[in-house]
Image (cartoon, rainbow, N blue to C red; front, side, top):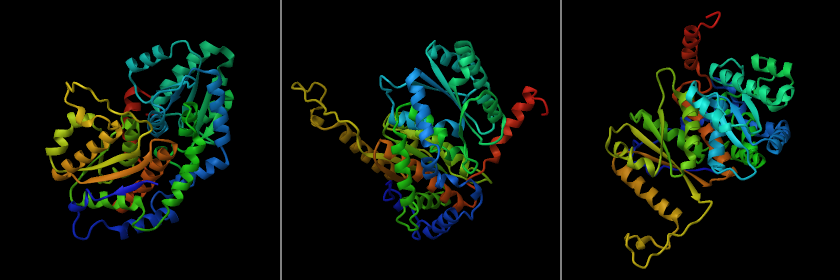
Length: 424
């Protein structure tokens, strides 16, 4: 289970401390489905539901793709790709020799990036997983048409066998296309918003194709959600949500999520969408940003240490490293590094993390540690469930609906109008 350490933030609290009573009321709304947007809280039951319904089909489809293709092109934007990409880069940063390469498209409108992806894909056998609730969002729709055409040129009348659609169960442009072409389909649940959907087929199919053991992920998620149902200040989701809201009330308006694993980069991107889209509304919200330590200590470190005191810092730390490497001893000691000879690189990294924490706290930056045992399927599942539950509690504590995103539509309306879409 995830552990939360608030000792690096405690000196920045008022004497009253975080409002755990309010966190408890928010959690009760979530569990009882009485809060704003409760019709989109199906993610709390999602792992068990998936295990009972689609999981076997998802794994079978992934095995089919792995057996015949060198690549999977995932078409999606926002919650339709960030969770899967975060999982794959965290757990499989280096694909095995039998793992297909995963390409993520449909999340931009860059001709250069699109053409670079086509060049990298080359002439290998590939499949496409298009992910969209409606099928009308412009960025993925543009990419999907391009890659459908590529499949048709490559496979002719067999092209439809290489398309897997994850979409609405009953309606929408993409669902209609899937039905008319006979594509294998998976469901974007009606009661789960995109940013909460990574433990559905939205995330699980690309993860399984990449070689991640999604059964382990789902089993771990089921257990983690049970643990996170604890209605007590000992619940790590309460600690995190209440601490960040308490600090926000004291004008710490920006939260930096840091991690000492470079492979965590897209998990941080997923986290930014989860919290930014859930809390940033009604003129409220903590601004979510991310950094990669220790690299960004040599670029953003100065600002964090000595810039405006509006920052709080949350640090994801993995207790155990997956691999070990002892730093070598050199007889001549020409680089002066024998003082760390024989120590594991992971141990050196933990010391660096402790040093950074002490420096930032001394510099006026509240620090929250989010600790996970290991960078594996169970650790990934624990982080996803923890961040989702804490996000919902934090949103309710601030008085917003954590499950809608009305502001996202503003740019889409302008874009469609300026492109001349009929009816706009």
